[in-house]
Length: 253
Length: 275
Image 1 (cartoon, chains in turn cyan, yellow):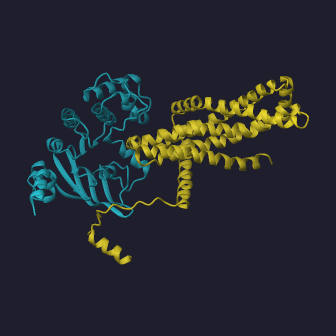
Image 2 (spheres, helix red, strand yellow):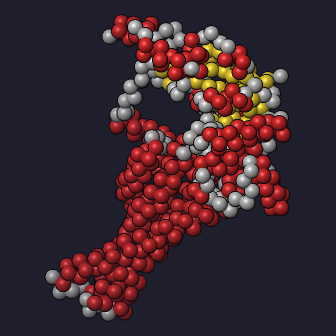
Image 3 (cartoon, helix red, strand yellow):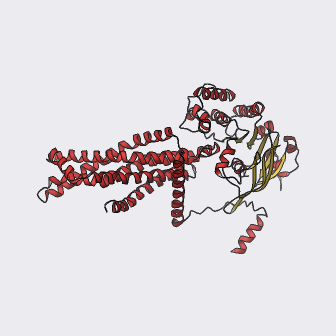
């Protein structure tokens, strides 16, 4: 059963088509990565999937509701099922970690007792392996810690789908590995569907059940990591093995 | 020309995923003016409907009122206190040529401050200090995706960011204007004392030549200016594009637009309120 279905999505800005006829089905509980070069349309697709922008044409079904056709108010109801982890965390820098994590909860659930909020924040921080940082402000955290708090904030609303925008970009290999583990553990623990937009190949092949590759606004391959690795598509192979193509290019006629 | 364009389209394929970078032309002044008026009107309407539906948190409003009050009170007191003193100096210098009309000094300054200088200088102070801060803060939130994070969590940026700031500016500017009036009068009083005008004569003149309606006119103006400053600062912040440069541009534009709008609106309000 699909958690996310994308049907014939086209997205255009003046004088340019960013995404062309995108079709994609993401099964519930899976981790699906969307990879591609910079400028291939990955982030635009993520913004469409989370309702931050609307497509020029086509349909995006989240739990069978078309977010491309609903009103902003209806979209807000659907957004409560969605968690979004931003590339640069997008934590509210005027709020401390505690207030960042409970931000959505206190605004959508009425009069949650403080004890319950404390408990929830402790649990979320334990899940992202950052206990005891409730009172710190985002500026007092490292990039990797901010990403983990971003994940804790996204999980606070207990979403059924979590979208990750470049979760490991700019991180050292060890921290990137920690983030990968968190994504996998979160799925195991909650059964949440995860959509990861990234171009970090080791992470993608490690965590994904399926991989989609975007190239110039179109999906050129969708399959399991093994299927993608074995693809004979030259665009896919160039993306997976740029060094080979670079050498071939240098040595070629 | 048309053939060239058609050829280019064919070369980029049926999918049209052109590789060429689109040329983003800066829109002309008329287009920018229409955009500004349209965006501001829509934002004001969204804020208004949000307020009608009780769509804001009281603690956000109180926080903003405190921030705006604390931020702007210093600059407003300095501007108006100094202006009052300078105003008194010029009036005293002028009236000396006619043998001195000290009995008019307090009244002239009081009338000017309550009707005009208090609300406009208070508005300029608020626009320069808090309006700029609002545009910079919201602009930074836009470029660091914090506004997208709000929307992703189904929290309306209008409800969370715009309404508390706009209401806080509407509530706080009349209070700052009252302080501006006091500071202006006190500044001119101190100068008048130095120039040999007695305190009694000064305050009697203020009492004789100013009315409660003058104070109310000034406060009514300040409510309108507060609305404009809150609205424009938020609108400029929300339309920020392009990182740190964009935040700087939004901040500057916010102050410039607010100051221009304060003086244009002041002209019309003066006509309406003195009828």
